[in-house]
Structures are given as C-alpha cells and as structure tokens.
Image 1 (cartoon, rainbow, N blue to C red):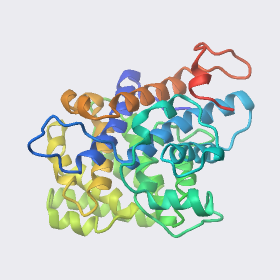
Image 2 (tube, rainbow, N blue to C red):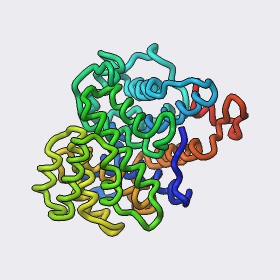
Image 3 (tube, rainbow, N blue to C red):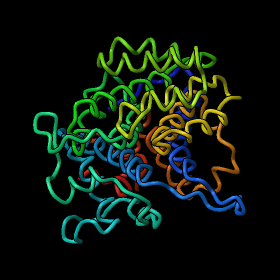
Length: 348
C-alpha cells in the first residue's frame, strides 16, 4: 500500500488530515447544538467512530503485508470493525482480543447512534463479499466510513478503489453501495493529489467520471450540473439526495460542496448540507470533500477543539501519512525506526 503524493508533501498531509476531520465535523454538526450552550462538546457519531477504525485497520494491514509477506486487507478491516463492536459491547469478550492504541480511547465505547447493516453483519451473518453478499443494504455508512481509504495509491496492489469496494461489501450487499464507496474515495484521492492552487471540484469530478460506474457517474454529472445552474437550493438537494442510501449521500455531498466554491464558502456549504434529508451522511461527505480540497487549516480551531475525537482523528491521519511515506514499523527485511509502532498498530 503506497500513496500518490502531491508535489508538496505538507499540503498533501494537510489535506489528508482535513478530509478526515471534515468527515467527523460534518456528521457531528448535522445534529443541532443547544443554542444556550455554544461551547458544548461536539459529540462523535457512529460513522466517525467506524472511520477511525478504517484508518487503524489500514495501517495494520500495511504492516502485516510488510512483515508477513501475505495479507488479505478486507479481513484485517473486518477485525478492526469488530474491535469497535467489542468496545460497543455488541460482541462478547471472548470473541476477540483488544489490542493497539485505538481501543484505549474511552469515547469509542460511547454509543452514539445506529449502524444497522454493520451491526447485523457482526451479530448474524458475518462478513460478506462481492461474490457472496449477505444482505441488500446500500446505506450511506458503506460510503462514508470508507472515505479514509482515499490516500492509498490507485497503482497499489490494494488500491483506494479496491479497498473501498471490498470493505463496503463486508457489511453492505448492494452493488450500488460498493460503486458509490469506490467513487467517493476516487474523488477524494484526486482532490488530495491535485496541485496547490488547482482545488477545482467540478474539474476533479469530471476527470474521474470515466473511471466510475456508469450510474454513479451519471448521478455525479447531474449533481455538478445542478450546482452550476441552481446552486444551494434545498428543493434540488432533496431531489438529488432523496434518501439515506450511499448514492444519494455521495451526490448530495458533492452538490453541497460544489454549490459554494472557494474557501470562503465552506460555512455555507456545511450549513446547507445539514438541511438534507439525511443530514449526517451528506454533511460528512461534504466535509470530507472540503477538507480534501482545502486542507486542515480550513476548519476553525475553536470548533476542532470542541470535537471530542479531534486529537484521536488527527493522530490517526498523521500516522497514516507516516505509514504511507516513511514506514516507521519496518518490514521483514528492515527493522522499525519507531520501536513502539508495531505495538500501537499490531500487524499480527
């Protein structure tokens, strides 16, 4: 697993961090905060919790591959999601061991909402695959929790698109969930790698369209056309993102982000995304897009300080970048240059 770096590595790192934090802020801020408590903590949603384990599991999969020589990354990600299930007391203690630093975070034990397809897979069916799906779900969690795969290179053996597709299929059985997850990470991958000063969402989406599933590409084309002709209209948003499925959330997030271009439009874009029929999903998608375009600096420090998982998510994003660019955990042929890396991210 490698990355496709922008010629400016610090910009690329800022975008990786900004995208993950934007996802979290989007999901959380879609919930109304009490007007008489403007400084109240911003609570993390369940999809943000799962996205944290997406990053952790991907780092662990990379280490396993480097040290063991063979790895099936979706299986490693399934174990990561099951660690979340253990923390949530959905799975019995005997089901698996809890290791790695992420399981020591108390907030990840807090129950903050539903993840029905994921929980059903854990409790009833076990992991699915594209060849053997276990249900017909195309809920938006399949898309949003997989967005952190975007920094992976499209040329790697397990690319951004392949990881998103296969890991969506673990718990969501509808092909449109898989194709939407693949499209979401490919769009973010292109945004992360765009040259500084070329943060043009419509151009990036248009460039990526030929690589995407035809139905998803058509939906995104419609979202871009709507953003250019009727930007920021709730009626259009309700039409484009009419339900809680992954395709709707993908199109709604892109429409919201494209309706208010430039760094100065992020507040309007996020507020507008929060008016969607599925506000948490659309806002999370829009936040991930905006963070990937503009970098972590676009998010106000005061808001980040209030979010209960900011430090955890920012640490994960930085560690992900380190794994992709410096491999501090070493390999079968090279010792680790960070002696605690393999303890923090055990590759088994």
